[in-house]
Image (cartoon, rainbow, N blue to C red; front, side, top):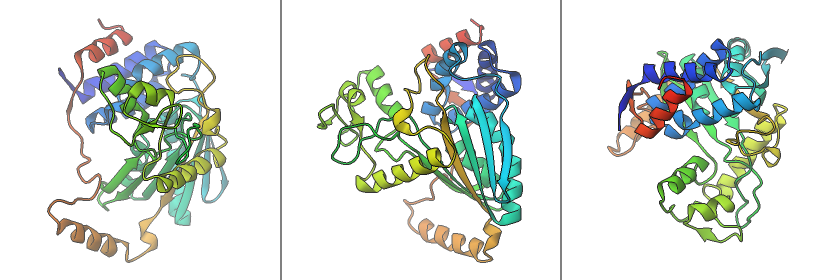
Length: 327
């Protein structure tokens, strides 16, 4: 398996997106997110998605020329209409206004609507933390998760991400987790590899637990932690769809289908200035110290630095080069 420099992954991804119809600044914004995912080992949100991006650019399912429209309807609220384009450039256009609102008000919301899937939600909350704010993010997706004990797909994997600044331009803690027992991509990757999936990930069409990825993809995923994950998934659904104007998961078509209507998804972020509390730094430090006392425990995301190179399967890299017209 070849090791590819992250800078090369970013540059080739940008060229591939431009070749399929994305404007240069938009392609660059998406390519940065793909490269960051590969650098941190988040392969499901990296090059794995590039083919669908390119095919959907060609079919018009995602607009490669969409100009996000930013508004600030209230002092602590920023809204971005992505215009059925990518989520990354829409967030980029609204980010400075959201930071200004959070600095002015102490807390602020950033609602991105009518967007393509954002793929890695933590990519965005990480940026919020690096700017000195606590970042919380929510998004939804096409329906794949059934209620505990049910079998009907009602909501998406509906991730929640949370990032805490370290006060030095870095991230002290971060988690980015689906509210389903597993991300959908792990099941599709298991199917492609001819592998079984662990018990507790999914049910078949009849609502019976299954370890067969084919049966899982025909059935539904289950929430993480049963009713607890179901509640968090519903919270993400209500905020991501209700507060952005994006579709409910149940109305979203499969995300990787090359043709069809736009994803029309929403991403909802909260920005909180830790300076609102003079005790924030001390309380966080006390928590981190208590965790560090157990040699096997660590804060999530504490090793978020990323690598300069990533292992990329040879067949995937050949396909990526082909998308960029370079093989």
